[in-house]
Amino acid sequence: ISMRKIYIVDRDAFICLDKEATPQFWGAHWSSRLDRQTIISSPKSWVYRCTRKYLPPGAAILEGGCGMGQFVYSLMVNGYRAIGVDTATATIEAVRRMAPELDVRIGDICNLAFEESSFDGYWSLGVIEHNWGGYQQYVMEMDRVLKAGGYLFISFPAISLLRRIKIAFGRYDAVKSIDAQPPGFYQFILDKNRVRRDIESVGFELIETQWLAGVKGVKEELPIFGVIIEYAQRRNSRLANRVIFLFDLLIRWATGNSVLLVFRKNKDS
Image (tube, rainbow, N blue to C red; front, side):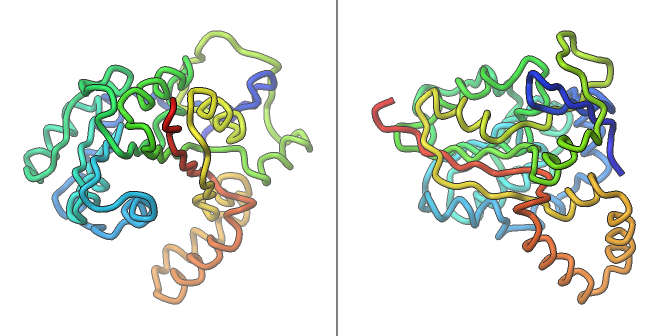
């Protein structure tokens, strides 16, 4: 159910080992399910619903690391001026063919081809955790292209309460420190408070925290219960799906696999 995790004490973070998250990896990962129907399947996505709480239609929004472009589509059809950027060249070219109405571009999110203060909002969904060198350069570029008073929406795998309990009971492989990138490094699982402090230090204010994917967290960390959930999901009945959805809402505060942090850029930064 899960890749190998090692807890790094001095970083207060996990490293996950599987396959290295290169542009080629993501291209292959997405290619098997990339078609127009996938891109347009969720016009009222949770990304749109979260965005509309803070920004009105017409706002300019960048998704850094847009993958298959489904959230760029969701924002666009709801009136936002949405642009997506990703390094996975083959994926972006395929999205352009399948959904030519979308503005998706090949680019490096650490060196974006936009002027300062170009966007009202910036979405980063599961991106910052994949860089062994850390996320500081990503954050500096987010800050550069966001307008004063703009909003940063950023999600990443995080150390939940359940993971903290397992750390306390010594249930993971652990090392004090590690310097060189290990073979097969896929991602970090990060401490949300450390990420919050790092982003606040460059001139942002945290305004919302949402834990995400509570059921996925259970499947990752409690495999016995994960087997039961997998069985219910395979049945694919309306009742089972509803029960799992409600169960996720109830437990995600403690078992969430990832977290969404919403920041506002200070107007004087």
